[in-house]
Image 1 (cartoon, rainbow, N blue to C red):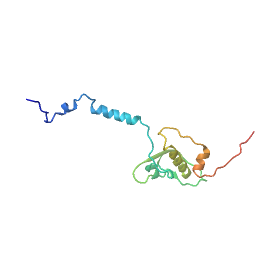
Image 2: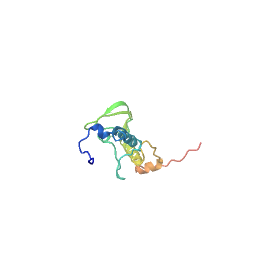
Image 3: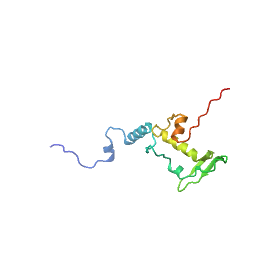
Image 4: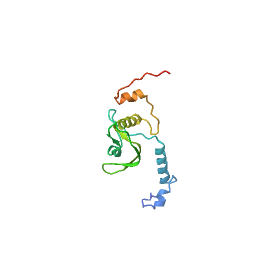
Length: 140
C-alpha cells in the first residue's frame, strides 16, 4: 500500500516548524531594512509649496505690522483650527518667515531627510522673487 499525502489539518506547531526563521524575526528584519532606507518628503509640483497640515491650520506665522518689534515667545501654545497642538519657542514669526521656511522645505524635498541643502543667498532671494539689493563692499 502506498502512502498518500496527508490532507488532514495540522497543528500550528507542526505547520510553523519548517526550519526557517520565525515570522517575528523576518518581520524585524523587514522593519530594520525599512529603517535603514533614506526617508524623503512627499512629492509636490514644482510651482507649489507644501507644509504640514497642523502648521497650515495654526497661527504660527502672523501678519503683525513689520514696524512693530518682534516678541520672544517661550513655550507658547499657538492657536490651531481643529484638532492638534502647536507649541513654539523663539522669536515671533511673520509672513516673510513663512515664505522663507516654505522655500527651504521645497529645496530639501528631493534630498534624504537629515541632509544639508546648499544654496547661495542670491539664488534664494531670486527664487522668492524678492528684490536683490547689491551693496558695495566697504574698504577700511
